[in-house]
Amino acid sequence: MATEETPLLHQPADAECIESDSRPKAAILREELWTLVRFALPIFGTQTLEYTLVSASVISIGHLSTTALAGITLGSMTSNVTGYSIIQGLASALDTMLPSAWTSPQPHLVGLWSQRMMLVIFASLIPMYIAWFNAETILLSLKQDPEVAHLAAVYLRWISLGLPAYAFNSISRRYFQSQGLFAAPTRIVLAVAPINLLLNWLLVWGPEPVRLGYIGAPIATAISFNLISIMSIMYGILYAPRTAWCPPSRRMFSNLGILVRLGLSGVGQTTCEWWAWELIGLAASLLGPAALAAQSILIISGTTTYQAPYALSVATAVRIGNLLGEGNAKRAGVTSTTAMLLALTIGLLNSTMFVVFRKNWAYIFNDDPEVVGLVASVMPIVALFQVFDGMAGITGGIMRARGLQFLGAIFNFSAYYMLGIPLALFFTFKLHMDLYGLWLGLTFSLVYCAAAGTYVSLRTNWDSEVEKAAERVRAEERERLEEIRVATATEEAEAESV
Image 1 (cartoon, rainbow, N blue to C red):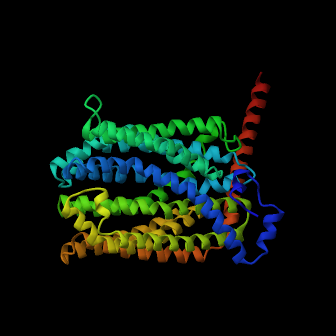
Image 2 (cartoon, rainbow, N blue to C red; image 1 turned 45 degrees about the vertical axis):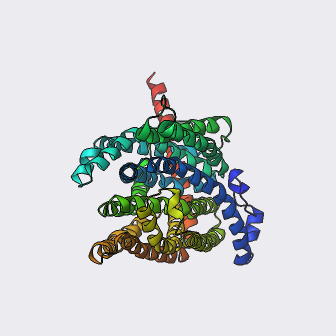
Image 3 (cartoon, one colour; image 1 turned 135 degrees about the vertical axis):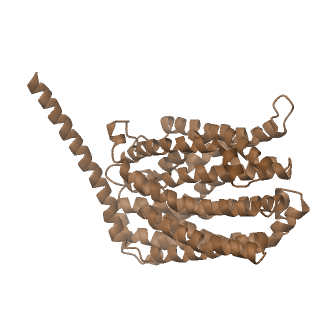
């Protein structure tokens, strides 16, 4: 029977696993339900705690002034558009490559693909730094308020100290999770999260010798990102098994094309969604500082609750990838169905919470009565949004496990830019529905995404997916043998010349 320990111990499909495939799908579904929950819980802890690294800054700055909150919100939006979304999109290629490599006959490919992705992502940091250090000019050209644009640019300059660490963390987390080491990133972020809270208090609100005010928040976040990187390296060296590790060699510079192809498709899948939200944030800024502050609260709230379905989507991608590497097509299909049922349940629970606490929710972030009222008025549509957002996230994870990032990008582009955003702008500025109209339009886009993703996931040929995963491993083996052949021929030629 497949359990949480199966990928960790690197055990391919055995007789017991084959026997389980002959049982009814309902029995396998119950097993996979428990396995996905066990996988997802530590991932949820990691994602939630890591998100506090950014949200703690917003909360601490939010109590300085509404203008400061608008500035850090715009800065955070800009960092998402030009940095974090691109990094996450590129790293999503590892969701396809690593889990199936771990349960294949060549588990060291996990380390090799991680090294290759490091080269790809770090090359992408150069244009990101150029954009961040010219952010004020760019934002002013987009007609942003000068004071808010300046504060956003200041935020970006200081948060850039943690950008390489953020990129490294995106890779290291997938490296550990593909091996079933789900708790490792959680423990690391759990250790850093209270340090981040302390740094936020000291650098923003602390005693005079260390208090920096506004810039203290991004500095605290950057320090925390770097601490996570250092602790991840220490864990990998001192505690993680060496099975997945591949010593650096010339092979890390080969086969970058497949990572670039999957990564760019992943960028399309990720940025279409992230950028759509930032465009909506820009639209909210045109409604005034109070609307932008309310939008910030709603975004943070929705993102926080999304950590549960997102954790499940990561767990699903890893689990399906492991099963594809083992050659277990039937169980991979059942896992897909199980994940979608879980996503529906989580979405309904989140929706209920937002409805019940809608009138008091905003007080967590801000005391402005206008902001509190705006948040309460939009909460019902945000509650409905939860159901479809979770389902879209899960089906996106299933597609990443299959290497269908490009299809996911098509779905997201058509959902947001051909449907959701035009409707949102129409509702907001033509029908004068203001912030509620923005969220209503985007809800339509998530309904479309969830429906399309569910259709594709339910019609998957899992036997074909198993063959694709096996072919990737065989291609790597052919490359390794060819490299050995060339090296041997070179040595023989040199010996003959001597």
